[in-house]
Length: 106
Image (cartoon, rainbow, N blue to C red; front, side, top):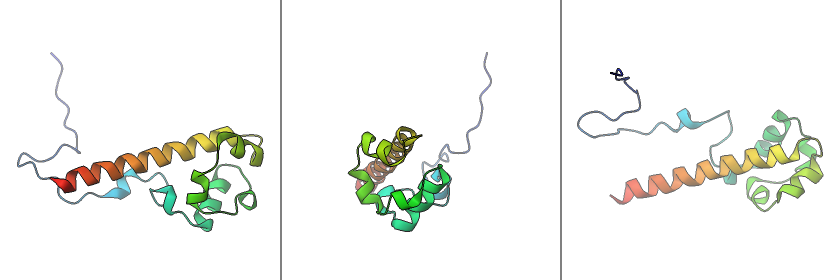
């Protein structure tokens, strides 16, 4: 018979979650929602992934409008991975926003 493992993220028995600490979800020092990134955050993100920040003189909202091929044009070596990372972060932010909205409605 398997043993039970306690998960630290399980809510207490009274059902209260308490304050949600969003820092647990952060991967780095950048804001969780890439749509809120300014030029400096976009530059830091691109630079940390091997790209040249000057190839992305834009904010996070502008990144949302870029296709996979547009990323690949600006970063030929790993533009597709950069696009995939951005889309993953965006999906995570949207899912979190939807979750918070649902919990607030209750």
